[in-house]
Image (cartoon, rainbow, N blue to C red; front, side, top):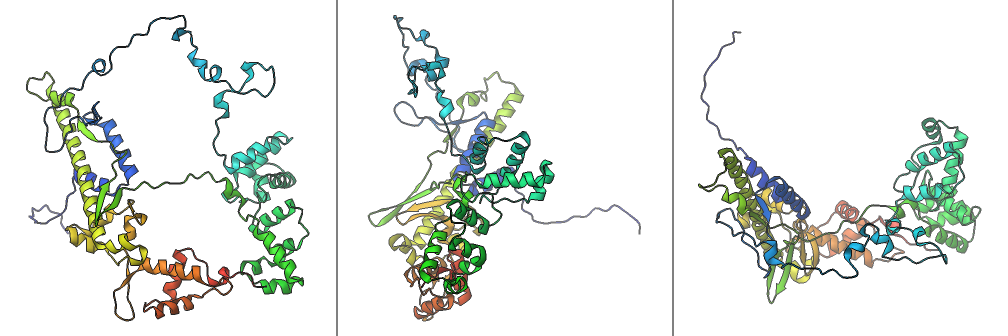
Length: 489
């Protein structure tokens, strides 16, 4: 087969995404904190972008929009804003203060020993602390033990291999191999750490952790220990009758032993978790004013942008700037204009989406979760004449605060559940809320099975299969009926 060159004409259509369009799409799906970080990064990279500051009378100075390039007035000088202040020399001059030692010398600390020298007082920086994690807490205790260098290394290795639950994830053989010690030394160090606070630490399983805690309470030979050591599988299934039969003890004693076990912590390491809570800051606020709902976008913390007047002056005809400089400024100005326009478009899109959600879900805002209607992305997309992918990006990682509480925007989109009598369909969120109410109202000694819950929904003219009940129950972190059952002695 011979190779040859040919010319061929082909007509086709394809979508080419410009960098500006890619940036607009990226900004649309960012959360509020991510947007603030992105804008701050653009301010650092683009010298033409400046943050609008408030003037002395509380009004914003001139801002730049994508459709306007008017000359901005020069900001007042520092001398015009704050008049010169003269400090007259007195007997006590500020120069006499040793500012480097101000924190220690001029902020006195209480002394725990009479007559102690002030230089021996701890620095204020020495007492600033943060919540210690599990490893830090154990390392601090390890420092009080009289150990050799080898034992300290083995102890540090053991502490470093504890997971967030406080369980040891390596065996003695691995500890000895990695640290070069004997298994007896490894066993001794594991035992030493198990004697530290919190009780039950460095165990290999929940059973061992509970037994260590009972040992700390001097209950190693108690009925609680017998139940944990030999019948923990019955305890997990809450089969109390089988436990009473297996241990051949009166039910009152078994009941008291189980109460002791329930008071223990099966995962002692979690109390020292250093994971910081993630606080939600709403992107949109919805308030009810008379009979109407008012939508307010939360712009707090988001920089308000303008184009620098200094660089705009460099583009004038009478400017002495070189052509290369003007080209650079022109390019950065276009980038700044597109960024400002994209942020404005993002805010308008979010407002329109929330406005449509409020219109569809007005009953929810009036009366709560029980009145949440089925809603899909296509409904909102057709309402505001946008694509479904745009609606999906807008509702990602964004939260709305309303009289009913704070919810993610995606919360308002739910599948529908048909009714037996042909009435209006219900949303899956409403069904989950009803399922939670049913479980909360059940008899704890006779919890409802998934079939029983499905029958209750059937009596309420709601089509719901048993497997759907089980799926929603798992999503709500509700245990099966056998684990929800309270002991009945």
